[in-house]
Length: 103
Image (tube, rainbow, N blue to C red; front, side):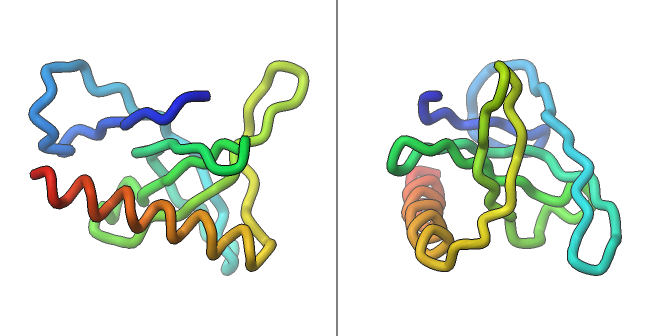
């Protein structure tokens, strides 16, 4: 998996491209289902990660999931290890800062 920028309908990135959304139904800690859109993927320590935003609340904070593959299928897994969580959130914060500075 390579690092790539996934675009949403209102990404404002200036690229001329079709907007395809990768929508996932995610159940939160309170049992509520939310439609989440994958907006960004990145790698760290040979693991892939995806950043998802709430489709109905794009201003809310993104959620980071680890991408795992099994039998040629990819699926999203919550990150429960505190050290891994701290590492990937720091990476994503750097990426987000760079994205904002380039606008």
